[in-house]
Every structure is written in C-alpha cells, then in structure tokens.
Length: 264
Ligand code: ADP
Ligand code: MG
Image 1 (cartoon, rainbow, N blue to C red):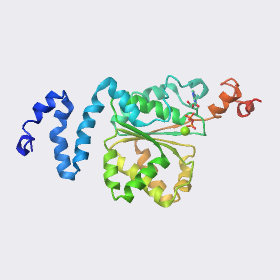
Image 2 (image 1 turned 180 degrees about the vertical axis):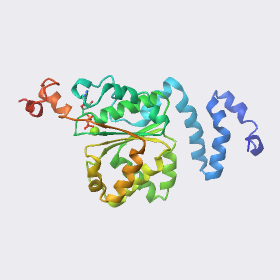
Image 3 (image 1 turned 90 degrees about the vertical axis):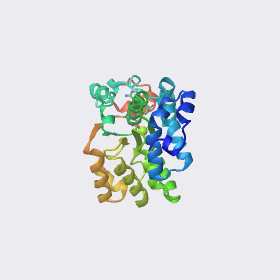
Image 4 (image 1 turned 30 degrees about the horizontal axis):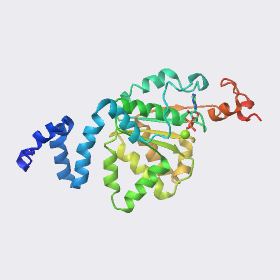
C-alpha cells in the first residue's frame, strides 16, 4: 500500500525538502514491515532515519565505525604478517574484499591470546563499515548480556530481528569464560538466527573441540558449530602473544623463550 493511500500525501515533498533520498526509497517497504510486525512509532522512525544516516557515504563510514563500537581501531595495514605467518596475507586480502559478507558467510579466528584475533576481526569489520555494511562488535559475554536483558523485557525476538539489519556482527572472545546454560542457549539463538541471513566473525582461544565444555552442553555446541561453519572461513593463528613480544623488546621474528619473559 502506498503512502498516499494511507494519507501522508505531503511526505514526498517533505522528504525531498530534507534531501533524504533513502528515506523516500525505503518508505513504502519500511511502512509495510512496520504494519506487519507492529513496530512502535519510534522503531519505524529509527529504521527510516538509519537508512539515510548510514548511507551518507564518507560520514556514513565514520558513523558506522563509531556505531560498531570497536575496542580499538585496527586495520590490515597495521598488521605485521611476518610476525604471524599463520595469517596468510593473500587469504586476509581476499577476505577484505568481503564477498563472504554479501553471501552471509562467516569467519572464525582461533589462536592463543595475543596472536591477533581481535585485531584481524576488527580490521575486516572496519572494511565492512567502509563498504557500507552495518556492523556491531561486542564480546560474547556482552552479546549474552544484551540478549539476556532483551529476554527479561520479553523482547528477545524483537532484538534478534533488529540485529538482522546488521550485515556483520563480531562475537569476540568465545571461550574465555565457561557459559551458563541460559547464556549458551542465547548464543545459540543468535547464531541460529543469523544462519544464511547475516555474517558473523567469531574469535576464540579454544578450538571447536572445547566448545562443548565452554557452552556446557555438547548438543548445543554441535548445533551452533554446525550453523557457524556451514559457510565459513577458519583462520587459526599461532605462536606467542604479540603483546609480550612488544613488552620484551625482543625482535618480532624471535619466537624464543625470551619472547615470553619481559626484560627487567
Ligand atoms: P587476541 O585477540 O588474539 O588476544 P589481539 O588481536 O588483541 O590478540 O592482539 C593483541 C595486541 O597485539 C593488539 O594490540 C594487536 O593490535 C597487536 N597485534 C597482535 N598481532 C599483531 C600483528 N601480527 N601485527 C601487529 N599487531 C599485532
Ligand atoms: Mg582478543
């Protein structure tokens, strides 16, 4: 149903005055979704305004990066590939082309602490922001807290649906803490909801074989991993923490015991 048929004849004129072409483009579709899904007035206005705000290019990239809430600004250009040969530069450059985001596929970074998982996840996600994708970054625990809060206010489903508007979610640090049953179920709900609908980057210091233990349930872990890896690139980083290398002052290529011992 057109905006005219529902009233609002002056909308095209008013939207034109605001120079907000994406609002004009999305109006009918957004209004239809809002009616079908009984959105609040605020939610409807938010969806329309976001479409415009996120699409405004140069400032759009900045706003997408700010909105994504990365812990630090890290890029592929900052990454020292010689210090981390397990991250093959051609593969990372290929992932930076983001065909996988268009295909709703995933990327998993594994490896010990300090090997660059969060750095590479952030770098790919910033590329996605630059390409116009909406991105949100949080640790697994922060995602769980958010979903738990939504569940308590009876809006879990609405929150999961809202997250579908993001092209890419980063779920950092799965496995640093074992999860309660309820938390594991929420993480599963997030991954299941995004399966073939949107991309996820996960990082973990534990291999998939340990996820049953982390999630406290082998079946939930198996079901989650199954959806995550059906369309996924897995990158396993190796070696000592780059943080310790920096602190020790040892050369980055020296992977000896000195790399572990901060110099006095
Ligand atoms: P992880 O998430 O695997 O624990 P991070 O990605 O947080 O590790 O890396 C720890 C710190 O070391 C970050 O400041 C990151 O930018 C830096 N770092 C790690 N690996 C590299 C690398 N190969 N080149 C440049 N900086 C790196
Ligand atoms: Mg990390």
